[in-house]
Length: 375
Image 1 (spheres, rainbow, N blue to C red):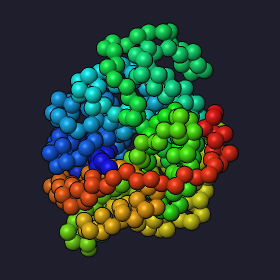
Image 2 (image 1 turned 90 degrees about the vertical axis):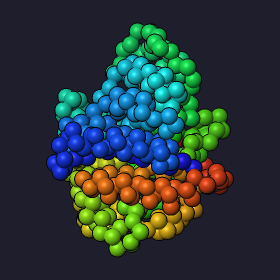
Image 3 (image 1 turned 180 degrees about the vertical axis):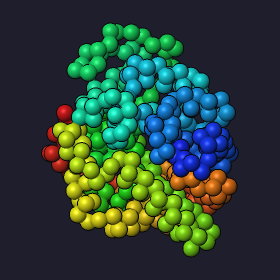
């Protein structure tokens, strides 16, 4: 199993944007020497919450400064991008990096970012489904063409041409049952953020794996890529102190940026109904319980504690790849680097030693989930 790092480029005015970017890029480049396998920069726009407006451009620079590490878009927000341009830029990145590019796609969740693009959130799901299929086909064939509700593209060949398949190195951000079903139908691996207990998540993940096999000639899905916020420290109390200040701080940033308790999700038709229901639940149970579950599910503690937590997660959900967020909420960069190095040395070494394990296959896929996958 591989160990990755997710880059969110968050800046709460503790640094200038220039200072923040210089430090973040330095850590990505140095992460290769620490043993990290994949870098996953996000796409976000306009706000302190996260600022990486073009992860493909960023990764082109990282490609020239690294030799081994894979370069993944975590993710390209499909409704904000032209599908043909995504194909062109990903193929070019693959050439520049000697085949190290990894495709990650998402549909976005922030109403204020959608407003910045003048885009309608109610169209997001259908736009994603149409464009993702165009992108996947274009990366495999080098030909882009479309005649769908939202995308019209006359047949055109991209140059340079793809020189190898993206199969096995293409993913989708999945945080709802609908997204997992779409990913399975499109032959995409699943990348998800830790937000709840893995006991709750396990049935959904097993259903995704079953659907993936159903839609992909019996092939197994790639290992899940699971994004965790990490506070790794030799002192348990210090690790918890950092977590309660910075991981909890990020939780509040998440609530604000995505307006997670807002009623607007209900106004988007079918596009974000999962989040409309989640907003009602969160308003009912309150933030205190949600914060404790968020903290418990993410990774804070000593290396021994984190290794034990990851072993237990593997027992519950099967194989996955660790995708750690180490720099968030303006944690001092010296402290971030210490955390990254300790995690790589003491925790990642065990994770990388894990061999793929067989997991029992569910007897059947829920009809409701299968119906979503077919749409």
